[in-house]
Length: 120
Image (cartoon, rainbow, N blue to C red):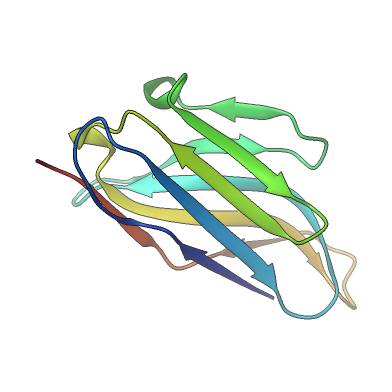
């Protein structure tokens, strides 16, 4: 099973980006899906989370500006980031809790980061 994130880039303050994450690789069951952010020299922090049932939670710093969504039929995770601020700069990582085919246990899967830089 693999997660592939995309959609990062350079954007001016106040701008928007849409990050995408594709889950692929055989048969699997997806549970929780999340986006994390890691700024240079800092720890990786949770930005947003969506459960399989569609319940969402957000870090206080992004509430009202970011929206996480999923397309369960196509195994996609999205993060719509609006009104971006310089402090939103960092590498964004998608994460999913998955039961891969042939297994009965949940495992953690991470995508490679996609860089978001907010600067004028």
